[in-house]
Length: 600
Image (tube, rainbow, N blue to C red; front, top):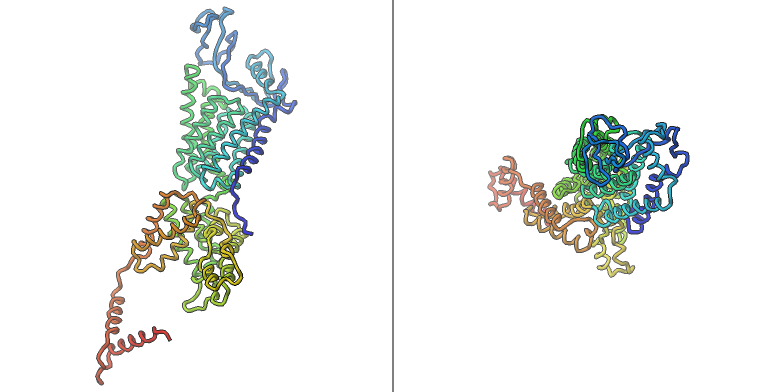
């Protein structure tokens, strides 16, 4: 049985979401389950204590950070007064927003207001109560279920594969765990967490709409670590969105670094505006005075860090997402690859067919915005199974060579033809070829019936009472635009050789017939091609075929031979005894040629 890529169903989506929701929940509340990690006054704190951005109301002013305006006072009646009023009145309190970070290893002082606030907040998490843990689990489960449903029903066809969804959820969980470690082990601002890395990878491997969805999910999940700190959530959303939008060209992965930096600058602007809305002011000097704990520095630096990580780890990330990077694809286009050399030597006709397909398929893919390089590589390798029994395929027979199918029963011939799909898939997997390329091998014929041998079987009265399914290819229907294009091109390139003269109208009619046949038999149902895509493909492939088979001006010697041949085809008078020139020889040759072309 041919093993193909498995698509994620509803049950698989629920199981995956439950599993990863448990992982995320344990990551979030895990430190609260360990009594030894609880802070105590008079002892170094075992983890970094973080109080999310929140409103603070104090009876006294306490120490004020240099360079900041005094907090606004509220009287007992609720009327605002200036900071220069008498601060000794007991009825006046201070109101301001604050974000508190107490680094790991700090000895907690009970007389320090900041330490008391941090201790009080941390003790609300300890011990982890079952109700809060269950609520955290529900948050993560809901987000993962929504993500799985979108990928399964509305995402690009590649994200509907079980392997891809597992890789994507695993990547998201990895970044989430890294975020938790940064929060509990370092004094860095939480804005340094490179959450935008995952959306950048999604933009590189899939497309922007999927990246936007994953960015929203990652923003909510990560901000959940700080009780949905609003400025933190807004920055994560803005930075990931801007980074994905600024990553303009997937062919140049280095742009990820600049995209991440640009996303950080956009998010920094958003942060300054939000802080001004909350506090009524924003002071750059105060932000810079905080050093590594500066949110502003963390926002910009975190964006650049996300871009750098996305660039340098893109190959591993792309493999985790079930895709294949451009660097690896470029390596596979090397005609010195052992598998390609094997095909060129053992099945030269199939190899030339594959190369012609590659040019046509690459142009078609580029026309609709699909992965043109992946399509070219798939065209190179899709027929490698024909190297096992090359003479069973007409393109590998020499002119006049006997076809082995003439001596075989239809079902045996069909089995030999279908075997190249299974054998090619095995050769590619054994050769370490990435699965997205292997997919072309078992989808380029889909689940079509080998009509020629099926009709041959019926013409012989079907003595073994075989069904149509016996003549059906054992692969699967194309699951992506790229594999669907190769299926179309496989038939179109072969049929184009029968078009004479090679005119655009005839090419277009032939392409339309093939496309409509694939649609009628349902071979394109799961590929994600739209009617607009098909319209563009028909026009583009017709243009490419016209360019491939365009005429050439004849060389002078060709025109001379043509004139000689045309003269030789005209019956001439019997030569005189003295006439032994080239004309008589040409005439004799012409007659001889005509006679030799007649059937015996």
